Image (cartoon, rainbow, N blue to C red; front, side):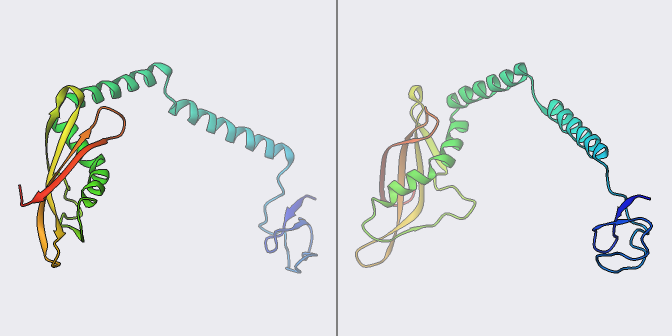
Length: 179
């Protein structure tokens, strides 16, 4: 005779019980799983720990691999700072928000950005000072409202310092027209 779980209420009953004393179902032990013993629970826990430990060991990198990956990232970052296209693309993405905010502060009235969802506010860029990783980002995707409420196309630039981890806005300016 063994203790099993009732197939209906999941409470402990004898496997020889005709009805469950808790819920009254007939033959509660028929098809029910026996209650796991403490030994079974410990064995299951050890197997689970072994599997998790093996996965952690298999997925972790060695110190040499981590150092090599970090050195590669650092070399790629240094190479990007010397390449106008690479640093310009990066600056167009990471400096867009602070530059756009600075440009909006130049307006005396309403500001309307005309760039699309996937378009950049700064599609063009050029070196301001290559040795210091300073760039000038250029765009013309904004309209300022004049004193009469008419919207005027504006061209703008934003000079940024990309030498650190985050861009620093050095200067912004906006004037009427398109590039």
